[in-house]
Length: 202
Image 1 (cartoon, rainbow, N blue to C red):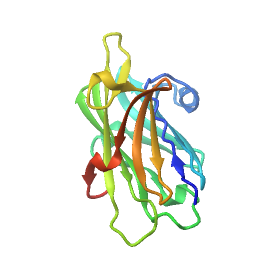
Image 2: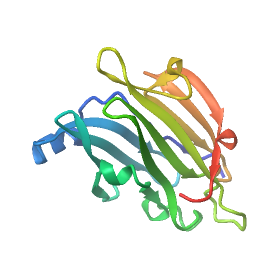
Image 3: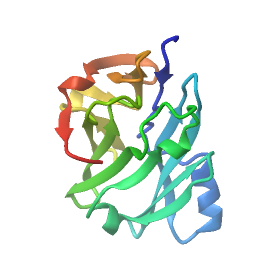
Image 4: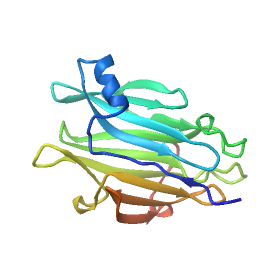
């Protein structure tokens, strides 16, 4: 089996485009910005998704998740701050029954400073293959902070590691083993997912 590669491109620059522009027409009372674009690409199935955030009077109120597998949902930020929302399950990726049943990825938001500083956690199943081993759940947490110009910047651990793209690789055994950050296509840093925080569930 050839190596399968799963790309999650997380564009955190908060510029409106794509489905976020459509939301501006559909729900005009909110100022919609792009939060995350997810491009899931594997040899066994692709999922393209957009996460958009809707502001009202400068305050984040709604997060929209839309993907090309038919998922189209709106989540109040107040609920997202309470617990994680499900982004992907095994039903969203056609893999011929070789991926574990259940959740693959969830998203959780934590507000550090209202309207200014957030923590965004991507919780994911590290070992996707349906084999008799325990599920390995990990959490990748990045920070989103407004800079002096009023623009939101995303970074991992330190403000010097700003990025707008994340690449997550899966090995031939369907294990997510590396996370690589890029800024406009330029390499920022790479981490091994085994070093990320282990969590009990998604």
